[in-house]
Image (tube, rainbow, N blue to C red):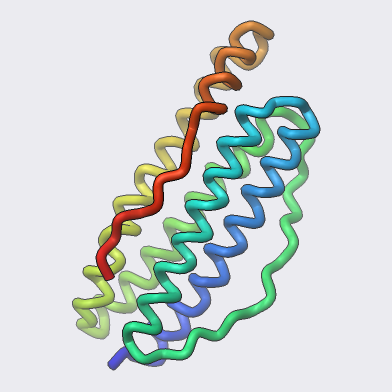
Length: 170
């Protein structure tokens, strides 16, 4: 049986993951408006990934006989005033999500809730990958973004990203 604090944190994480999907859809819209279809695609795929993360937390709660409390999802409010702004906001957001996962993990560790810790291990690894990828996009934009041909090639590369559902056994 899950501790009430763990239940609260996991329920809250469902909402945070859905917010992440909203945020990345907002970034996709921004890049659509700029006719950067590859960047728009990259963030649409990222939104799908975040939605599935929410559903993994949702299913974990259900598997532990906990009713999920769905809350309102806040509207993204990031100021997008440059091609690099969504990239920087994404890195900051991923660092924030990492802190949330670490908070849940620490609470589970405190309660000796090894099952929840094992469930979260995948997310800890995933967040490391997310932060590295977000930083890489910023670095690549710094290198190529001011050159129209470089930006075109980067946009073309990002257009090739496809969605692959996470493979986490619950």
